[in-house]
Length: 427
Image (tube, rainbow, N blue to C red):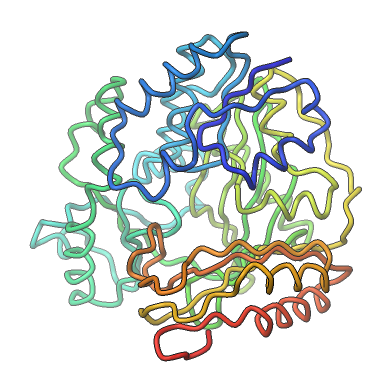
């Protein structure tokens, strides 16, 4: 049996891991539990690393692999722990190059200059930052380290730039401080460790958004799936992740080529990755938004619904030093999606569907999974890692024979689930 340690082990993903063909030869153990890296007051990186090392050393049988499907600090801890125990994993510097938004853009500029927007670094506390950027709005601003669009804002003029910069500066340390600790403690280049700037401004991208899932095995970059990231009408927040992509194959191949060049210049190896792209049909352009050195946890169920196995299998085989296998279309459904149930106004939850309602819906629509992120009476301001324009209260995972059926099923779910905010206004 192989001891596979997971950074951020949780029940939802553990169930899918146990369904993998390789699972009969693996024991999945927590390097860190999900409760230790999510909904926490602060990230004490030194404590998290020592806790994981102590836990892994204490396990009989040693360490055969370490994996994660979660963003910060999960992706950053995997290479540290892999090196500590002498098992396969990506290089820490390559992972940090992916995650540090400014450093990553500098690397991308070397290989794919025509596929990235204009970008500049800035200090959100500098009163002259807007003038120094020398960029015409609209553009986006965000911290060097963020995920799920946390503290990411669209700027339309100098006034909104100053207002959003103040908000970023007030909330920056939660993620930036522990991230900078890793840069300094593990001897990353001084020009990034000692930067006064902590944020990046990037030109706006438009068009259809999607995420390419891929991996690198012994230097070979492989793309194996593209998921459409569908946004709310006239908003930047995501409505659903839908798979397989409906983009033309020629565009998907172009994205795969851009991904290969970007991943190669960054030096990522022995790792899964996902890359967010925009395709603008008006200009026939493919633009890279960001690189994440892991599988996307948000896509695991929809891959399982279409392929019969989740892409946890890609992650696991890489960590065990095995070449990933092609994913056959052996799933129960032709298409699948992860729908994000959102509200765009702050308030308090006055109605949250109970377990009996969810189970009834699952009997009516087989294969449906509902993950509720809120509790009865909870104020939405208490939710962590939200984008800057909405509150996500649940995920609904659905499969269908075609896209129209998929949307019909989702509408039925919204009717049955009946989330309500504040005075009973339905979402």
